[in-house]
Each structure stands twice: as structure tokens, then as C-alpha cells.
Amino acid sequence: MEAIVSTSIDFEPRYSPDGTEISFVSDRSGNMELWKSDADGRRAVQLTAFDGPAVGAHRWSPDGQNIVFISVLAGQADIFAVNSSGGATRRLTNDPSQDVYPWWSQDGEWIYFDSQRTGEFHTFKMPAAGGEPVQAETDAIGQSKVSPDGMVLYYAEKESPYAVWSVPLAGGEPTQVVDATLRGQFDVVADGIYYAVQRTSTERFSVHFLRFATGAVEPIFQVDAEISTGISVAPDGHSILFGQEHYVANIMLVENFR
Image 1 (cartoon, rainbow, N blue to C red):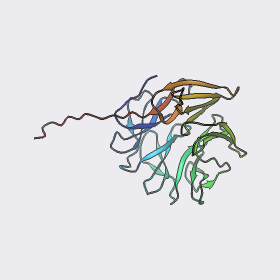
Image 2: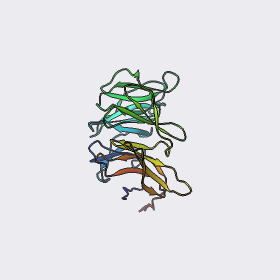
Image 3: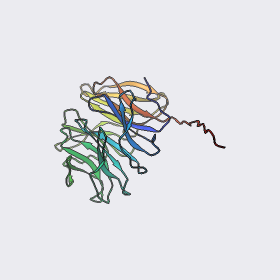
Image 4: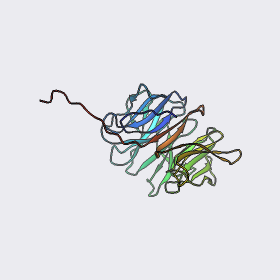
């Protein structure tokens, strides 16, 4: 287990679709902005410059060319996008309601998100190239991830115990897959689900794996500090990114102050 460490607040790590880069949210510029780096944490570059309003809940497009995220730039949460190589951000929603938890269809043609625009939260979708959002066939409120084959949507409940459910993207009844997670932190691969587990009297904070073929749950690793900002499995399945809270203080040297 290797740490990608800085003395800034770095959280919400995500692997790029090809596994060569990671994206994350950081305050290393003075504000919470979206950044990316090589997969080992080197060559970090800043992708957004909102200079105040925080960003978060970001997701890579399947082709790795774009990243969607939310920001409260106008006082409510809206969906934005930025090219993964940098450039100007693009505002995709502009509604006085809260638009949150964006994610991509597997073919990259649609961006899904949860919205309060009808009074209660429902799932909406809009063309990735831009266009008017419409209510989606599948209503899965919470942190959502699509199966690698693009057929099934997995989502975590918004409240404790943060169970994970699956539902066909074409529509159908949801099925509970994992009964409890640590604040809805999970990732989906072809043969199962990795998910974070709360510390217990006999176990530290940990990540488990539910294998679809057998239904067996396998412990993967344990850590002492809380897994705080999501987990992301590398495309080759050999590595897992996760965030942890570590409180630090920088010692600064001021020269020629008098």
C-alpha cells in the first residue's frame, strides 16, 4: 500500500478510463478545484479555476476526453464539464434547483444526474453534447455507477446504512446488492463490487469485494484511518485509489520581515 501524499486537502480520487491518470479535488491552489495527475501522483495540473465555489462529484467520460462535476457557482449545485487536457469549463445545467451526482452512459452519449427540478429528487439525463434534460427511465437517486457492459446501474442510498442497489438501465425493479457501506463508497468491475466498510469492534476500516458469480464477500484490505472520499479501481483491476483524512499543519518560513 502506497500513499500519494501532499499537505493539502486532496480527496475524491478517480482513475481515468485508461488508468494512466487520476483526477481529484484539492485546495492546493487556495480553493477547492479539480486537478489531475499521472497515476503515481506526479505532474499534477489544475483543471478548474472557480476561485471560491467548491467543486466535486466528478466523473470521467468513457473516452477519457472530458470530466463532469458539480459546483455551486450560482448559489445552487449545477453540472459542469471540462476537457481532461484543460481549457474552459462548460456549464451544462442552469436551473434554480439542485443538480447533483452526474455520471455518463457507457457509450458517452448521455450525462445522467439527480435533480430537484420537479420538487423531489429524480434522475434526469441530457445529451453529452448539450441539450434540454429529460427525466430518465431509471430513477436511481444517489451515487451511481454503470456496469462495465453498460447494462446495469448500481447506486448507493443517500442515507445510512448506504445500501447498494442494482437496476437495469433499460428500466425495471431495483435489487439490493450490498446491505451496508461506509457512506456509499463503492466501485463496480466486471465480476463484482468493491465497497468500503465501517470500523467495527473487531475490524478496522476496510474494503470488501462482493463476487457476482458466487455471492461471496472477500476482505481486501484494512486501514486505521477512515476511508473518507470514495474508492476507485484501476481499469486493470490491480490497484485501488481511496482517500483518507490526515490532519496536517505546514511550517512556514518568512524571511526579511523587518
